Length: 566
Image: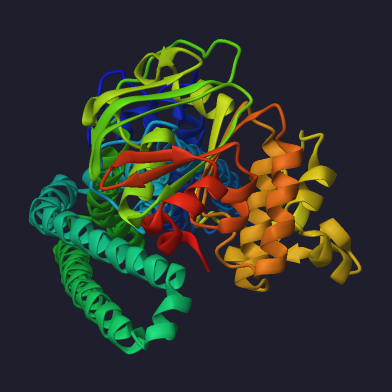
């Protein structure tokens, strides 16, 4: 079994270190190439100053040609190093984002749920936007180092002309970074809150889309819209706050960089006027003051992106470090399909006790819908064994001793609201493509008319959530998927509530025939399904209060007759 990751938790710093460590090769090459790019950019005004100085001093065409060739080499280096450096870094960035998306998705899809207070829409945002922003650290670090190369080269070149110019660049850069580091921390916290609010808005949309039809049915769509609008407005206001902080950061960085460039230019002009540097050095200093603006901008923006990446990594850590809600066993069920519920107390269930023998078809008539839902949740292993009293045994072994994957391979619990996915009828019935009973499942679930209705048959395209199917068609498609799994034990929860009475009769007979010799439990109030069952258990107030065939119960139990007769 693939159990949830129980190794040492991954806080945000661990996530970032992991991303950096497994991409160190790409980052080294990216840093080298981007360093060449920044060095070439910085070398251009230096070379220009030297050309001016030597051309004015030597007045030699050979020197001029050599200088032009040197500029061509610098320009070529700048162009190629940027192209290949960014290609390497962006490929590594995209690959790393994919890894974290898969990692977060794997946590959300583990058979054992994680104890995380996040909705599916929030996890989706973490698996997409936060994963992408965390992976940006792969580009941020090389760009930060390459920008530092440009600043160092400029400081050294200016220092060789006059030590005061070099010191001005070093001191000015340190002052800029000190000021901006304060703002970058504010950006990180604001971005984390923004991502959380956007995630909540996404979760709200997912919930509303899921319940869109019922909302329209009882006129609750306007209230739902107002609810979403409130959540979205909160996300918008936080986004505006982040934009303001980013704007203040960018404006401050630009202003400080411009002040430093202006200070270098004015200082160089004063030194040239005083005769302490020559014309070529003045040209170099003025050119560097202009060119250094770009690496300084990059250098000053990098802390902001580091904080954004850290904030996103912290949100990913909410999912990746969440412990499983239960520690599953490792055993596998023995051969056989018997099912035993022994004095289970959970929710509305009160000392529930019954046994289903291997190969038996048992129907459970639950008078209270909540009790039916609680029983289905316990059987589906959606409730940790330590969350309820009593025991559930499959093939003689307690549920808590079995691995969740093994339980679900042996016993399938099909919910009444089974999801329909975008794809085709065939991929919804047989997602793994390994079932050998698809035709029998289609026929038993009376899905044959849907298949025959379309020219593509089982390859007919199904929209997300079955939007192009009726309620009855979606329910029959879900039933066909459960039957095609051909599990040892099958539990169906209200599988025919959306179909007409005639179709329901046919489905009941077909299911009983197809499942003959296999253990089947149907939680239902359908007379058709109750009638084909070997026996019926009456579940009232959380306990079994009667047991017999459907027809005997109709004849001798007035409450049962009132509850199931239509």
